[in-house]
View 1 (cartoon, rainbow, N blue to C red):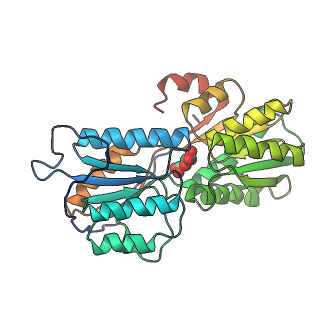
View 2 (spheres, rainbow, N blue to C red):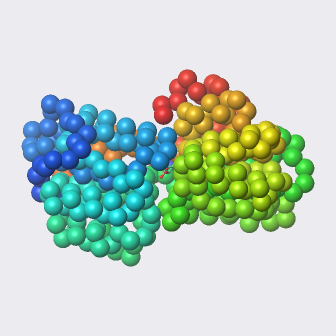
View 3 (cartoon, helix red, strand yellow):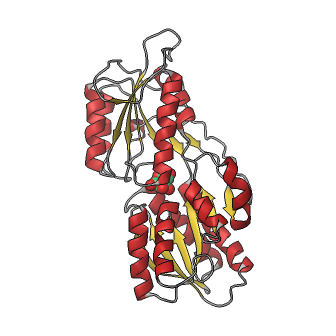
Length: 336
Ligand code: GZL
């Protein structure tokens, strides 16, 4: 592991409005016998998930459901299949059911003010998890718990420097970039952070020759990489905004008769198990970890918010960076 990064939480006190508790029929993530509320009314959490597009998302969903069950909360859970309109409908449904707290991972950064104003009017506090939003009204959510994607992009750039050196690469660096979902915070910010490193230290030798969204899916990565190789057969680096797109791209790289991790060096983000397996096989050269296991921290936050306590405005998750030689040793202890 290059270095384990511990991010301090930026404590900005925000008092949260209490919410009304009520139960209704939904995909309830289950709850255990304890009421999760010190003997008071059971907390009901409405969670609007992005979808099930990647291994990271699967691990994130498992973490949220398991932690809600352990906390004894009633969880109402929805999968938006990566469509903003579905997430907005789910949030409206949670408002109608008068849940205590709403949490969601916004599929894209814009278009949330109207529905979050409805939650505010209903006095239901909202927590952002995983991804953030762009809004001029800070009162629309009480806290954002998730990674610093711009820093992940910077880390990917620094990791590429190390990988190029280890590979003894000489000459121009022609980079293909597989972007995440168009308009999503991780896509915008991972591209921004990587470009900061390029602009600062590699204006003359690195160039992103092609960049397109693969929508964070394996199928998307495979399809777009095949097109990249048609138009730019001399690509020598792939920067993928997540492992699933990298894994799909590897299929196209190999179909083109090239060696992933050698002919085309690959830097990815997330650190799901399949990504580590590919790294241990020499097909991915480095992975910037993005931790999906937000469930326990989220449930602690839900309790504080429900009790009207002051909460941190921004909570960042702990993450590491992994190069190929660390993959085999790290695999047995990977939690997702
Ligand atoms: C990042 C998360 C991203 C992952 C992808 O926190 O929002 O969405 O990097 C997932 O794998 O689809």
